[in-house]
Amino acid sequence: MKNCTLKEFKKAIEEQAENTYFVDVRTPAEFEKGHIDGTINVALGEDFEEFFPDKDATYYIFCKIGGRSVTACAEMKAAGYKNIIHFKGSTEAWEKGGEELITS
Image (cartoon, rainbow, N blue to C red; front, side):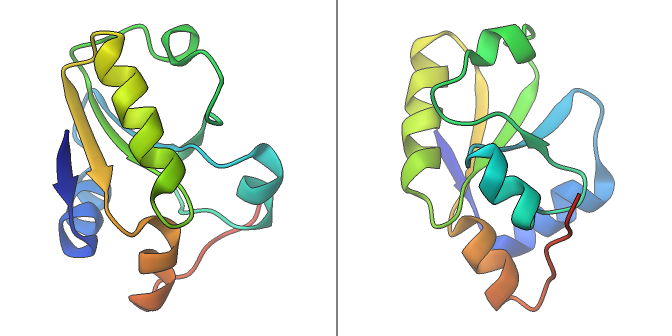
């Protein structure tokens, strides 16, 4: 699992490369209260393979502070996903970096 910084995450989300997904693993309730624009919510414990069958795509994984996302990255790696990037600091780092969360 590779880690990325806030700066690296911002650049990746701005560029939105093909076959790249930004996955927030918080609960749906947390996601609805505020999330990073352009991200997808698949809560920790859900079947990632159901949502993301392409194990060769690139996945940026994050949560609120980083605990659940580390677990999700480990589960994805065990399931055979090859390109997993952990956004270190997660939504907390996003907000501390001066960025806003949006609501649905």
